[in-house]
Image (cartoon, rainbow, N blue to C red; front, side, top):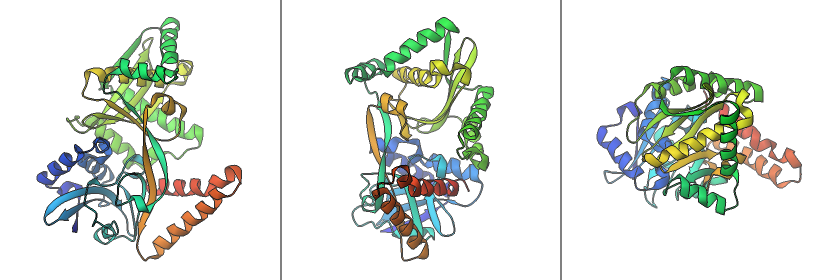
Length: 359
């Protein structure tokens, strides 16, 4: 079994077609983050030589693909902080050793944050997991809404009430899918940066290439299997909520969301998600993936979950020893009855990884 490493722009059309064919073999691989076009988009936005594609061959047959961002010593997901899923597309077989990626990529360690739990090659290397929250709606919005009501979830009923309240107090709602309004796209970027400042979070768009990535995707035409689209909700003629999402063949991945504070009492962001779920009835999409992150709206709207692993692949190196030590400290702290302090090492690791993913 061999591992070849290519730059995204050097990926031959026949290998790109093979990659897309493998994506169709598993529902979870339909995520736009698993697409060869995602690697190409990140590569273009970054403008350096960091994004690599590992192609795992068995007797000349391309069995699996994986996109990463490789530095001098370590590798992470292609797209870093902008990427919600990573890992292999395809099955290289039981003989595949993930450590073979290290030599091919020229790194000492590969850190992963969001690999599908049931990826055999990486499952033994996981150090923890968290769920991604997903809406599956193969039978349409009404069937999905009825199932949520039957499960005792009142969120959609509450959104219907807020919809009527917004129309009554402000004016009619206008939902726009696949919006080409650049002013609304630029407002989303401003809203996100305001949110980061107000909450003390890292401004992921300050890295430069991250905002270029969004701008490039907004300017690009969506294909049948990959793209990004802007969705907006206006209430009484004013922009209330705006979202920019990635698209696979059948999956919409919630990516960048924002809303105007003046409409806060109507939950405009959730109203926009509800509009998108209804709109999906007439489109090829039957999955809305909220990704990871434990937020109330995700728990209430999602009707299924997908477990994601974090961990690392390392060889005999100082970089691997450092990561092992960090995980050891995290494990000890999380086992102690220290309240919120138990989570501090994990938070520190995630913060460092976030910053690494923006470089």
